Length: 239
Picture 1 (tube, rainbow, N blue to C red):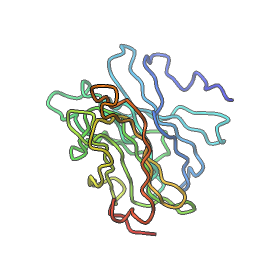
Picture 2 (cartoon, helix red, strand yellow):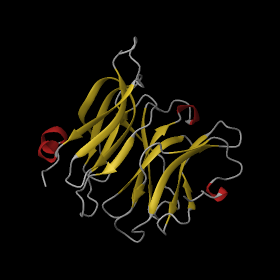
Picture 3 (tube, rainbow, N blue to C red):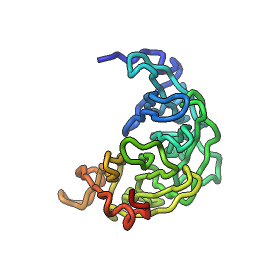
Picture 4 (spheres, rainbow, N blue to C red):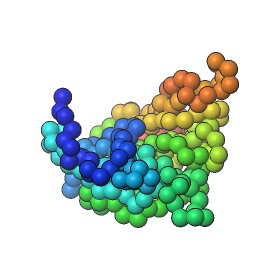
């Protein structure tokens, strides 16, 4: 085991958490092999939220604090793009947005230096979200280089934690289409990943009232879309 050094947290930060979902190892570009862990924190006053990351270039022996996004980033997940750059998908801390800005959706930021710094804070209003964690992954089979196709799992609902959805981007996150609803009922946190054979899998919290009123945290379920169905379910070409 390796103790994470104190340098991964600015001493003025208060709340601090990782993920909560998978980390990423880059497989292309100048930072090939880099391990990147998404994280989030609050400022010294414990009121303003930010997303950030930390990374390792020696297979986890040592770790470096990466860049911090603009304010209002929260729980996040990172995916590699087709050009070797990376993108982070963020839950929005709505209270930290300028008045009148829509925070019931997902936000994104991009890095061209492997997570050492982050660009603009881009709000995507078509990806509605009640204020909940979500996950993102690059769709490619094992042994292949990153594609321009990204998959996002989140609660696709503007006011309630329900409707666990997979949304698809076929142009490195520039445009998104809600593609497939896994579960219409109460749901919450999730993680999405692609198996070596091209299967798309989602772990997600959900509930349907097994112990009374439906609670989105009653249980964790697993949903797999096999390669033979990714075209029908997600509009992806079979490989």
